[in-house]
Image (cartoon, rainbow, N blue to C red):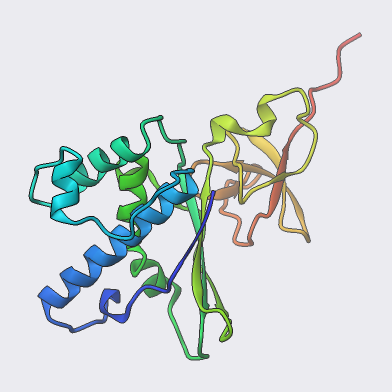
Length: 224
């Protein structure tokens, strides 16, 4: 599932020195924006852009504090069906101007959005793993943040009969540590995905290059 969100505001940067009240207000706005964008992506027809106290009361949500329980309760009312499960995500930032930016600072500005997405999906945001460092681009005509939510490995196409095909590592990853054939589009590896990183099955060393695709290994030849 893909989301397109405005670039996070400067007040959400780890280097921001704004007043705590201003930062808290900005955090809440970003959290709600991601919350409602996720519900819209899930197919909720009428999604508000913000939730007012009177609207919350009308929905039967009387808790004053807007914590995860508040938003998850609202999510269950607007989208009663169980939401899909996502375990990983990838971020692509499109900035309007060219200047030096750190990918770790860019990822940190996503925290409020991440909380809102987790609230809409009714999960703890600690279950989300950033697949790789954010991609940073200069796109002055359309600045934005693209978020790709990735299905868990248990839904990998390797579970079906068509195992011997290249699988996009940005969408599915192997389920459980075991040897697979992996590629970074230049080199092929017998590799293992341990849930955090790829490693070379022969040397047990981490693979520094970016693995783009993988496939299951064929069964060994049948004995005579």
